[in-house]
Image 1 (spheres, helix red, strand yellow):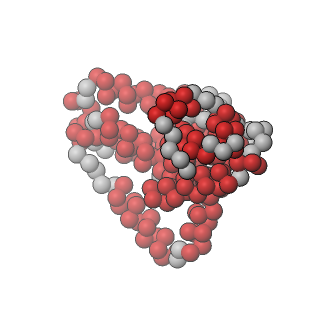
Image 2: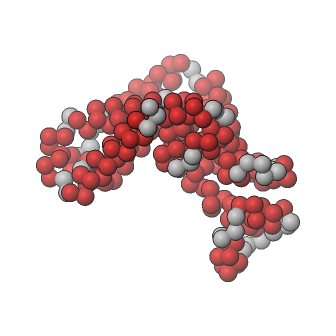
Image 3: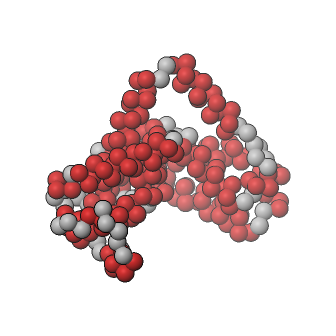
Length: 231
């Protein structure tokens, strides 16, 4: 594919997905880079939520982009392109997950789980736990620690801020199922985070800055609001 010049890229970035796709179909194949850069983060997060592996998530992204490019003419515009693309990535990630589960022996799976659990129980320095970066790590671990059926939903709704309808379409679920899984996922995350932080809270909170307090309490408050909104 030819390289897009800087000026053309700046203009193209303001186009809608459909405008970019139409031009790619018309032969301006280099513009496909706009689509990839636009959705790299989303596809990475979704694939990683399913597979919990950085390298495999990147492989899924590449496969998804290739498949989407090869089938652009099949995209009729009846659904948002972002959902169509995300669905391709989800299917590829789920396919890899099924293959992984078939190929792994039960003993290997148990050892991997034990290694993950022992790593999760390692307590970092309380000073680092008090930082915003540490809070982000705890939240990331809480999301990745969720069971398969909840992890992708939480990643799409809370991290990628996709709507309930978009998430349902991408995962081939009903909207009610998405709401239920999100509600249950939030409950599991709250329990996990409180359990991890509770043991050292007496030492950590006294020296925390006001800004750090606001972030911590704000996150828990939002999780609580999101969970109660289902009722």
